[in-house]
Length: 314
Image (cartoon, rainbow, N blue to C red):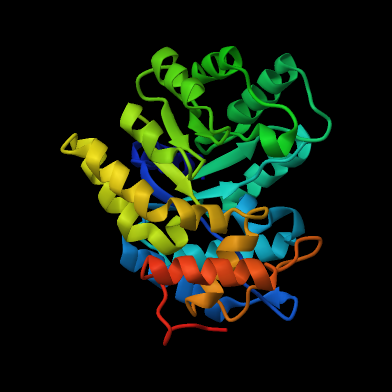
């Protein structure tokens, strides 16, 4: 068992966990997970060329998922997306509970785990460092930090990120503060193979142009192919600025509509309008997008040719 786990660890460490990564939404129908829609979404994502997936992240409505539902979503993703790498969201605001979640990720054979900064109890920086080092010490899987201060109430400081990047089992960070300067400094001050993934759709490609190695995205649910193409252009350094400007000009208003309310409200409605989800249903206290905002979203999706009059699902 020990020998097999060591071999698996080596394979995971060699996996190139970069590129366009979708933080998967969880489809619901009448209060239950809708696996028909989930399979349809995964097949669409694979056809779009998505490199990897985050299961049980913010977009999945992780606070409202039962443990057995997380396992079901992970197993479906592993089955349908055989070539992609899979990162399981395990984070919480209790070190002991997070370690228990990591054990499950090991059993399910995830490629890596993603641990959010502990929320609500708002530990000081020394507490955050202790928390993440403890996770990394005990995890058999590579660990990604997840910095999203707008949701957690506290964020990792640059100094804390630099210190944590020295741990050999901390593979990288999903940086979702939207602070491009912080992203630039992370790349400047951390080790060469420390992976910076942007977790903010508004600024993700600006960060990639500065050197970030990938994006954990929400809009890649519907713009996966376009994002893959732009990422390749930026990384090749060929007319990247012009391609980025064209992308922003075309999709800026769409992103505004997707994020007009808390994620994943907008993207679930978009997936429903495209016919990928039977329903735009969420679990309370999140509620479906209002009629007015749905109309605005639909108009933007038609303008950007993601939706035609014939394809309207409502």
